[in-house]
Amino acid sequence: MPLTSRNTTTLRTRAARPKAHRPLRTALLASASCVCLIAASAPAPAAPLGVGDRLFPHLGNPGYDVLAYDLAFAYRGNNSEPLPSVTTIDAWVTDRLEQINLDYSHGTVRSVEVNGVPAEFRSAGEDLVVTPAKRLVPGSRMRITVGHHSDPTPGKGVESGWVRTKDGLAMANQIDAAHRVFPSNDHPSDKAMFTIRVTAPDGYTAVANGLPLGTARRAGTTTWTYRTEHPMATELTQVSIGRSSVPHRSGPAGLPVRDVVPTKDRKKLEPWLRKTPQQIAWMERKVGSYPFETYGLLVADARTGFELETQTLSLFERELFTRPDFPKWYVESIMVHELAHQWFGNSVTPRSWSDLWLNEGHATWYEALYAEETAGKPLKTRMREAYQASDAWRAAGGPPAAPKGPEPGQKISIFRPNVYDGSALVLYALRQEIGRPAFERLERTWANIHRDRTVTTADFEDLASASAGRDLSGFFKAWLYGNKTPSMPGHPDWRSVAPAKERARLKR
Image (cartoon, rainbow, N blue to C red; front, side, top):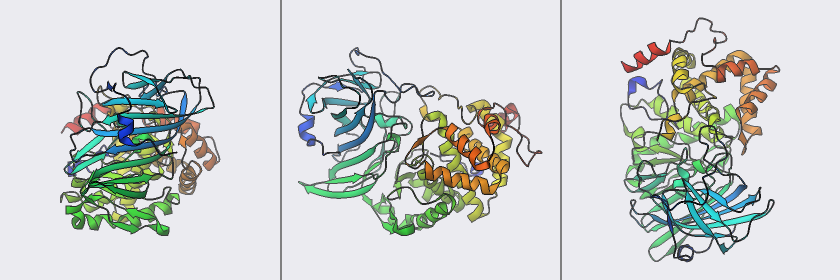
């Protein structure tokens, strides 16, 4: 997720950017009672839980492992109107459960069933607390079906995970906004398969993660169904609803590439869209075969301030491709940044948000490497500039693998320079330390052996040491956890500017 720079003078150092469920109507009418999670609710019988993430302790929930989500949304043609929705969750029970906590807020819950039996439910903070008719035992399967409304409008002090575009909706769920769209175990440590169904009036096109399973037309509406072939974190879910065109092309080895663009802009955007297959080929030469079943760009006519690597369908602002003051090399490098995330972050997913540097550092690395190889923008120059600012970035945002928490009410504020160029700088130092052949072998091995898995920083350290044939724990302790930037291997003359001087420079 690089933040989109609006100042072309700072482009190089920008801070960056399961079975079918019950019919929708039946499930929504199954209970006359409801819990409104937009406003404050009645006192809850239980507190919100969490998996103990250092930065976001209330995200995720213990006691179960989600296997699959089935999401159904009904869009009525008004992107300010809540969408009648049904979320079905299939999961393994891992602990004895008398109550089940789901992450969900900013919507109205109408009914909950557990294994086909109506269940009691209440809200607690940003959790939906479900009490099944029978307690659940470890090793059993459970199916939770929630009838709810998914609200695309922002609430007091919170943003929905929906992005309202000029002609419909898209999703941007990073970091924790997925549970403002659908009930879930909203933490990247619990990846699952997804089936997504969207019903919209004729004239609209719906596209979601994965491959299409088909459409069904009825009474002036079309239902579009998509399914992933690989597990996915909730924050990477994508649904696009709009008056869109979906151009198709082939990538390497016949990979299906499909883009989603406003129909009015299809011709204007085509020169950018046709670059994707060669960009995929470039990444495959670096780190191995593309890890998913399809890829493409979703170009949204909306102002988000960022681009986002939603799995198999990356989200981009229309403005990135239409502003004449954005250099061609810059736009292409941002395209590669989001593409690189399909390997680093989406396929190989961090187990905790403190491991974010593994995502953004790698995506920034390949963004910069692509700019060097295709546009003559030297990687060394960018890394030297990053080194100069590194101490200031660490002071402001913490070391790359121990980032400071978000600013109050601004969860995406953890996306600071220390996890972008500051983390790419760690990879540059590692390449300097172990040599290019060992580094390139490490990158390919990392992306291959951890495909579809979650990982930790310690996993990367161990593999790097194995690739180098020596213990690198001291190197990583200094570079990933130190408050001061270590000396750059091979460049003892590089200096980092004192934080106060760097802050003064950035204010000018």
